Amino acid sequence: MAEMCNFVVTVGVICNNIIIFAQNKYKFVYSKEYKSHLRIKMKLLQSKLAKYTAPQEAKALGIYPYFRAISSEQDSEVIINGKKVLMFGSNCYSGLVNDPRIKEAAIEATRKYGTGCAGSPFLNGTLDLHKQLEARIAEYIGKEDVMIYSTGFGVNLGVVSTLTGREDYILWDEQDHASIIEGHRLAFSQRLKYKHNDMESLEKQLQKCAPDKVKLIVTDGVFSMEGDVANLPKIVELAKKYDATVMVDEAHGIGVFGRGGRGTCDHFGVTKDVDLIMGTFSKSFASLGGFIATDKEITNFLRHHSRSYIFTASITPAATAAALKAMDLMEEESWRQDHLWEMTNYALEGFRNMGCEIGHTSTPIIPLYIRDNNLTFAITAELFEEGIFVNPVVSPAVAPTDTLIRFSLMATHTREQVTTALEKIQKVFRAHNLI
Ligand SMILES: Cc1ncc(COP(=O)(O)O)c(C=O)c1O
Image (cartoon, rainbow, N blue to C red; front, top):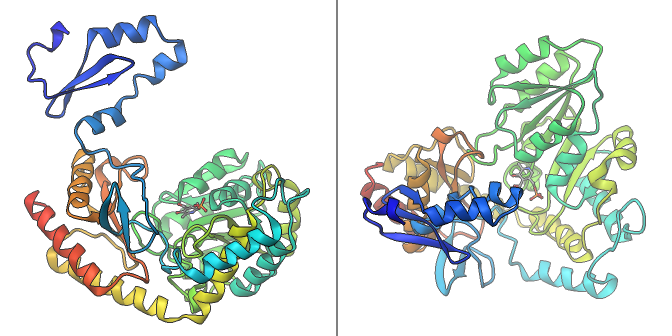
């Protein structure tokens, strides 16, 4: 421990009875004991991974923001560690996650079909309820056919990696969701990145492609971290010009944009021109799972080649029934979308008036830029103390210079709750001279 003597030690973090490091403000000093522990006791892999101590460092500073366990119903107010906080970190824009009618539908389906499916949809894991949900989504989204995957992540992984061949191209926005990136990393095709929502950059990349090869453009409809909307009319125009295929991820568009919450493709009137529309049940549909809606030629191929579809179990009966019910409710209860937008516009105006840097968002996903990792964590922790739950977004989800606090709205937030959040955020941001 001699090498720590020059430091004012405020806290030590202990693992396997050894002090890993001591903290002096933001500096960490690793003890001799810990270093020799890495050398002597551990196998190669463990000793390599034990050098990853960023989480322990954040915990030592009291600013670790992840895995905060909710012990109550999930709505605009939740309980964490016995403390009531206002939830501004959910992706359930429709606010349906705690709806008793959806819970009832899930219970009913569990009674009828059981708790799981014990197999892939390809083999023993297809229920008539899954077929019903596929048909309902096809009609809702406005596409010929639909396949249900176990997660939205699995949809992007299994669709983007499968459709194009060695000589084909995948063109992707640099801020596409991680699941799209994982998808094209698995593909054998040439991968061409274009600048975020920059149509000149997309066109330049399209010009590099051989005209007779498949060109798949993949974009988020609403970008998940910064809340801006893809320029779908222009993307579709370019796709027509260069004979490209378009896939849109509607994870954050459904429940927010379009008639009955159908998403950004519906909002822009480009559903017919977008070849593949991806969605997830884990956000506005208040469930778990995902789908791809597209033409029969494409689903016929995917059903027999897409590995994250074939080699994993189907979504549970409860999740299937919940998504079905949520879709009905989103269509029937238009007040949800109206109120969501009222709260969104109220919050956007509040943040702008306050002088917060909120980028190009115009949606219920509002990024509050902090541009410093530790400060983003510290502010998340301070807001939690003030009774406000928000999500910190740091590298690699965004560039290290673009760290932000992600503030998101649900249709069940009241104006009073949003006002409280705005006041608390103003207080904390002022204390850090951010506004
Ligand atoms: C844009 C986007 N696509 C796909 C996914 C994956 O969805 P799921 O939660 O269903 O795996 C997410 C979830 O974070 C997302 O934000």
